[in-house]
Length: 405
Image 1 (spheres, rainbow, N blue to C red):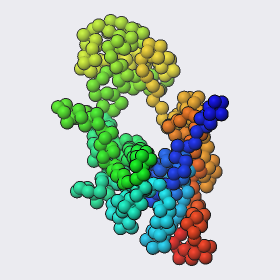
Image 2: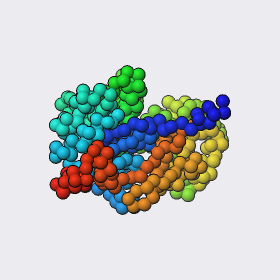
Image 3: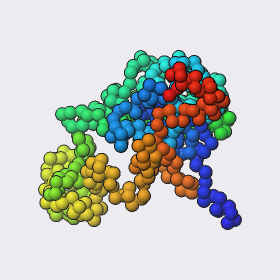
Image 4: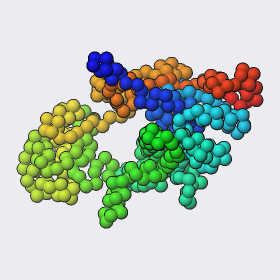
């Protein structure tokens, strides 16, 4: 019994033994395959010979490397080759023949021209899970439309509900890319589970528009089923008050959210010092507080404005009111909760160790997520070519002809 418990205490990585080949660029597909790598899969990243994944060139903020690339590509092997050369394409086909998963997010039609679309690959390799990630899907009037994150945010309506009444704004993170990447990731996991039951893989299709449209569920259903489209309210909430950020005496900002009238009573009595507001008709119900939002916000702002941020948070928490500090990204990097939970690690890279967050999926009983190094362009080209049976002379010829880097 003791041996059994000891064995169960150290489970293998969930995707150990799974091989992924990815012809990918930018964020959506690389973010999806990085999740697979963190869970133990071997991910072979196929890049262009002339600079690789173009996200490598977005900036040099991460110690000389691009921040997007560092974020989305740890733990992968980089194979740099020219897919337009038949010899380069043959290398990828050999790798796919032994792979479990293939992922691509090339421009619409490019994968099909190379014979690397999901339908063609799954027909040739019944056990393969093949993923096509696109901006708008393989059919319909938008199929050929170029798709970048900000453009899809606009098409999906996210920008219409984000910002102030005067100014719509895009999300500060690539929300469309992330949404598509996460649905591709979960789609791969679902397809692998099905393959475990049936022995067959199959194609998986994810579009950025459809992924982000799903995330728009609340405002979409509100507008479709009789309501009006939500108005932009900055940090406030369209139908709840108080729900906003309020300045404090030390220049900080504290956010709070009152979800029901019981919480409003506690706020009025214990934080605002005005218990009469709990029963006053202009404030007693959420509908009344929304109708008189200016007066509600003024009462809260007056009380918090004489406190520093730490004192305001302490009083709100003592009263059982949900609250938060408005932090910038540097403050996130130093967040006490992340530090207390030991969420930071170091990963290798061509410029040395870089800090990175553990992925949010925690699986007790198994090994920690495999946060491998960020690869240099073509770092693993020769070893991968040898693995598919190429000789030193063949590799030298490919290098001489510019097919590999």
